[in-house]
Length: 179
Image: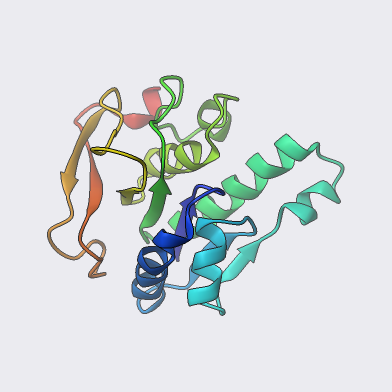
């Protein structure tokens, strides 16, 4: 499987990019996506067969709104990363310093205020390929404190040819689960 994550307030001008990425992923892997507006909505429109993770199902279990959002994102990333598929993110602001890759969902979803970056950090911690498209103003602002580096996508990722402009996270030699 593969997953898409991104800003709920992503401007509509990015709908084509998100749709292209979602379709490319879905051509090789079943696609997982959340129920939110913005990037999730653009991916669902491009790939109607995507498996949608709904916050309502977690609210029905008695969780608060914030806890349900985090649980929904964790479940989506876990499903997407399960078969080694990429997790694609569309972010419009820098990653909060408290958000770092980890295989522990609670370490990533630590209340720092960015579910998109928390999802990507969790995916990286699980060992999934993580590709980010910067949708904010100016030059890409990618986290340098993650144990690894960001390289421009220049070829297939997990067998998927992705549109230009993405940044692939390449983990460093230190274990990501230590954070």
